[in-house]
Length: 305
Image (cartoon, rainbow, N blue to C red; front, side, top):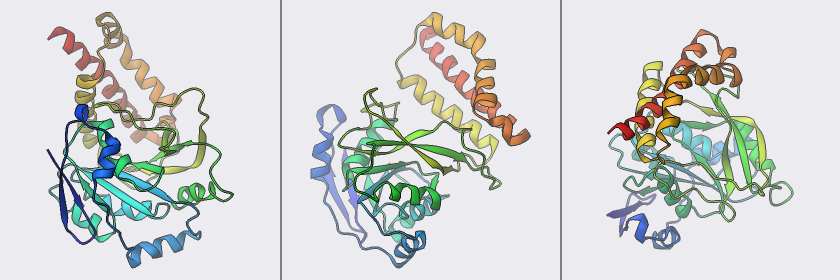
């Protein structure tokens, strides 16, 4: 398998990449040809508009695959807080790479290895230890950028990992209250925590003895283009997760398939604040609940097959 790094000048440097079982991800970092990137005028202007100089070196990594819809906004916003943005791209054929190059992001071309493995590649490709983990539909708000920078006002932050509130943005541009989606550990020090080497799971597993900080400002999540698109994403994601996750016992899945759906809906609608978002939020909660139930059904099929 070939691993290619695309620098700011558009040159591709080809390197051999071996499967995860035979490969140290630390070796990947040393194996990459590092290039010195110059900020574009647009990027510098974005940072100046936030109103703070960069108090500490922060890298941001983003996994991409045909993300031209939002990648420009995501990269521009990421540069408000990070002095380096790294894209781990698994074969985009649209304008994703063109947009990223123009905005000064560094591109690592990597065939899809799985959710956690792909983030590991991003971690290793970053130049700094403090990392911001973004998806290609997550936009850093000015408030969040300022809050992250303020953590370094007196030196190193108090915690080694920070949870970020997620603020869903509807296709119509309305920002929903935080809490509709669970908060996520998005900002962390890779010297302390690393993403899992796993095909399905891609969230930090945080030991109980590590205290977590919380950021109040929301990360704007443009999670879906329409409810139909959301349903497609749920179907695709649950297929992958049901296939790659550890198989749960048959009896346990039977109980979930029979009784789980109404519970999933009530949890999403009431406990996660979807009731505050009107009739559209009701429909959203129904699809999220159905997606969670669908994962149980697809995992049950593994037993039946």
